[in-house]
Length: 555
Image 1 (cartoon, rainbow, N blue to C red):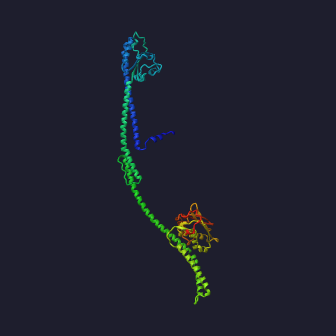
Image 2 (image 1 turned 30 degrees about the vertical axis):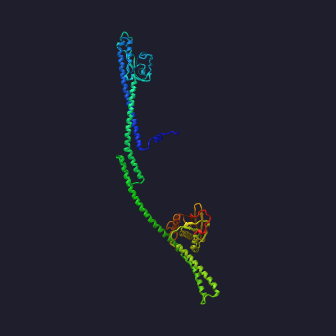
C-alpha cells in the first residue's frame, strides 16, 4: 500500500466547505481546551486530596509518636506496640511499622511483613543517597504513593524518631548523645476511597467537559451557519448568477460587517458590468450595422472594379479586334463588288450561277466569323450576375484564345497549350474565371513581347489528393525582381510604363481566385521568366479520381 503523506491525509479528512472547516477547527480547539482544563482540574483536585492526606498522615504519625512516647521512654514496648496495633485497626490505615536506622523492621502491624528494609528503595533513597544520611526532611519528601499487594494504591509516610535528650539521658537506654535518629515510623494509608472519589471527580469533569463541548459546538454550528455559511452561500449564488451573465439579479446577502461590505462591492461590480455590457452590446450592434454597410459598399466597389478591369482589358483588345473584324468585312466588301459586276440588268448569267453561290457562301462565312467575334466580346464585357456552375476549364481557355489570339499574333508571342484531358470541371463563375485567364495571359504576353522568341505555355493538371484543378501560365519574359513579388497583388502596384496599366489586373485576379476558394502562387526568376499557378476546387459532383468527364456535363 502507498504511504499516505500528511498533506494527503489532511486533504482526505478535512472538509472542503469553509463553514465546515470553521466548525471543525473551533470544535477541535474547544475539545482540546476543555480537555486540558479538565485534566488540569483533575490533577489539581488530586494534588489537593493527596496534600490533605499527607498532612493527615503526618498528624497521625505525630499522634502515634506522642501516644507511644511514655511507653517507649519507660521501655514498655509491648504497650507501645498494642497502641499502634489498635490505631492500625482504624478505617483507612493499611499498615504501621517501625524500623531502626539499619533498616531492620522492629515492629509491623502485618505479621508476615518483611524483616529488612532496603535502604536503596524509593522511600529510603532520599535520605540515604549520600554517605551521610539526611536528618531533617520536609513532609512532602517523606510521603510516597505506592501500589499495595492487594492492587490498590497506598500513601506511605515515614517519620523519623529522633534521639531526644530525655531518651539519651535515661538510664534504661543505651543511645549515646551523638546518635540523632533512632529509627523511622512508617505509616501506610489506604487510598481506595480516595481513588474512588478521584474517579467520581474524573467522571464528573469528563461529563461536564462533554456538556460544555456539545453546548459550545451547537453554538458554533448555529453561529457559523447564520453568520458565515448562509452569507457565503448567498454570495456564491450571486456570483454564479454574474458568471452566467444573469446581471439583472441583484446580489443580496442578509448580514452586515465585512461579509455585507463584500456583497455590496460585488453588487456594485455586477451593476457596472451590466451597464458596460449593455454599452458593449449597443456598440457591437452599431458596429455590425456599419460593417454590413461597409461590406455591401465593398462588394459593390468590387463589382465595379471587376467591370472596370473587364472594360480596360476590352479597350486593350479593341485594336486587334478591330483588325480581326476588318479582314472579313473587307472580304465581304470585295465579294459584294464582284457580285454587283456579275449581276446585270438581265440578272445572273446562267453560266455564273455557281460562282455567285460560292461568293455568297464566302460572304455568309465571313459575316458569321464577325458575328462570332462580336458575340465573344459582348459576353466578356457584359455585366452579368455572379453565378457558380460546373465549367470545363479547357472550354474557357478555348474561348479566351478566340478573344485574344489575334492580339498575341500582333505582339509576336506564341502560345502553347499543354492541357490534360482527365480534368474534372470546376465549380466557378465562368465569366470571372475567363477574366482571370485573359489577365494572366495578357500580362505574360506583355512580359514576353520584347523577346525574339516570346512564348507562353498554359498547362493544366489534377491534384487528386487535394481535389483541385491546377492551371499554370509560364512565360519567358524578363521576370519579376524578388523585392516586388510580395507586392504584385496589391491594388495600383505596377511595373509597367506610364499609360500601360494602373495595377488593377493582378489584384482583381487575386480577389476572384480567393473568392472561389482557390490559391494563387508566383515563381519568378529575373531574366528567365515567371510562372503563375492557380488551383481551384474541383466540382463536388465529380470525384477527383474520375479519369474522364463526359462532354455533355462541361460548360
